[in-house]
Length: 413
Ligand SMILES: Cc1cc2nc3c(=O)[nH]c(=O)nc-3n(C[C@H](O)[C@H](O)[C@H](O)COP(=O)(O)OP(=O)(O)OC[C@H]3O[C@@H](n4cnc5c(N)ncnc54)[C@H](O)[C@@H]3O)c2cc1C
Image (cartoon, rainbow, N blue to C red; front, top):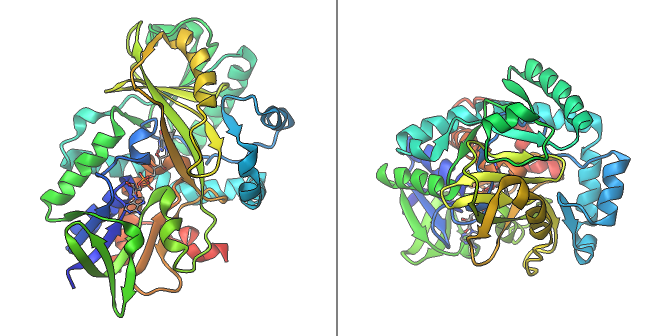
């Protein structure tokens, strides 16, 4: 046996899992067809979202549903050709988003969210990556005064309940804080506990470099070559055939390409999203700003001002539409003083989503030595390191820092 564990997928989840396993003395090979952190973990908005104590549910208010039905929103766009393949998944997502079930999902997620920043901090220090992470929090901005006031009152209650810090900024205070902003926002909530990353792909690459420095092995290969042979799992890579007694599927939105052939029917679907970088014309933001009423984010990144879009429901592999990017760009350019586009084409990524808003972390129910770590929805960057810890604790038989049952794969039947 070459290794104790093969981790398939070098996004933030796979790299973190590999690192935590290596820290516990396991001989670990990390396999990806690309370099570490070059897919979903590269293109996100860079929020380490400690304040997201409610996962993204399916909205239930009539106004939002009508807006979605007209398909003219910035925050959600759907390709009607994808709806048949998403229908069951969306129905389950709707069901799981009832007030009671949504609250249960939030309760389950809390132990992971609460540790998210501390787990990143520990890896950032070890990986010499402090220059990539800002203790900036993020700003949640609103256009409509009455909406802002309602949300501010709600945010203050949430902050009290969860021990979070939030500052309420009216329009003048917001512009004093972020002088590059134009007119248009009635105010913003400044969530102070989260952190933001100036280049999420580079952060994952630093974590991967730390893994290698600790004696971990990185190999380039195709995860779909995974085979079980007796007690061993094997994978074909450019460095030859790797084998190990245990294997972790951490392939983000592609995890189904490996678990489905093994007979697992886990409802994992992609919520697509785009980004584009712009030259800032009026200066750089000090923290990411989420335009909550229009549903996009502007995040200051090493590459420029990164606009990330809301959710696109479309078939995997179907060509990029760019619809939401065009809609968000028209709103954001004057508001944020965005200059010309920097990237030749928009980046398209896929949030790996489960309908119950929880990731899948733990042993595969029917295969010895097979482990799952995927489905981190909108918060995979946030939850990568804490997932790595939890999975490594489970795999090595240590006491786990939280009850792992909410994440078990068998919950989908
Ligand atoms: C627009 C957008 C904005 C977001 N903003 C945030 C945010 O601000 N904060 C936050 O916490 N989360 C955010 N997310 C979500 C977050 O980016 C994801 O949840 C997270 O990156 C998932 O990480 P992962 O490691 O599971 O998947 P990935 O990063 O996609 O890693 C999977 C890896 O598997 C590899 N792979 C796939 N198939 C194969 C194969 N056959 N063989 C070998 N390798 C393979 C890929 O190359 C890839 O490296 C955002 C997502 C999007 C799309």
